[in-house]
Every structure is written in C-alpha cells, then in structure tokens.
Image 1 (cartoon, one colour):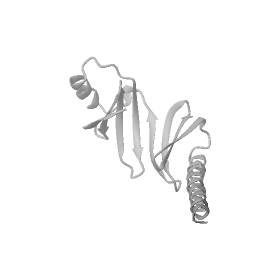
Image 2 (cartoon, one colour; image 1 turned 90 degrees about the horizontal axis):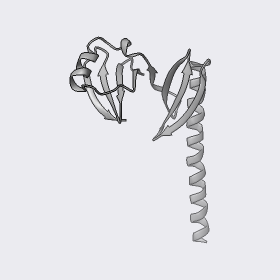
Image 3 (cartoon, one colour; image 1 turned 90 degrees about the vertical axis):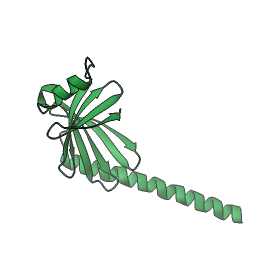
Length: 139
C-alpha cells in the first residue's frame, strides 16, 4: 500500500510540475503576442525558469526573455556596428585587436537599463549605455 501511495504522490507531483511549466510558457506567449503581434519566424526555448523567444520584427533579428508569469525581462535587437556608442569600438579594437565580430546587439532590460553587446567567437563583450566596458561573458 505504501508503494502505491508513493507512486501516486510521485505522479501527481510530476503532473503539477508539468502544468506549471505549461502555464509559464502560455503566460510568456500571451505577453509576447500582445507586445509583438507582427513578429515572424518565432522560436521558443526554455532556460531555467525563463522563456526565450527568437523572432524577426520589421526585418530585424530580435529576442525577448520572459519569466513564468509572462513578465518581459529583456529584449535584444541586432544592430549594425555603426549603431554602437562611439566609445565602444576604440576599446574593442585596443583589447580585441584583429578579432572578427560575429554580431552586435542592443539589450534593453525591463528596468530600462540598456547595454550593448559585441559577439565574437565563443564570447560576448558587454558595454553599458555610454559605451563603458562591463564584462566579457561566455557565449
């Protein structure tokens, strides 16, 4: 009898976890559709307790991260290197001499903080809104 109760509790717990994950994705999708109704090429993924969506909007590659309640945490939009703050490229050229740039992006966090990113092979180089170096992160 103990085995059956344990098995039933395990199954119910698994069902509850699955329902929470589904609800989280549903919440994220609802928020996304409200914010970006014209988005195309939509691809969802999950990392930890957050949901990331990659998409195209007005011919620009973008991504957004939502929590399980559907709150937007940050967006990332591909930009041209010429759109970066002017102080970024001199820093980059000095510290990453002859390193090819894979991509550049503008990151907007939900608290209105803006960062810029230069993607190189295996790394992202992050800068604040004024172009000051923040950190190097593994890609």
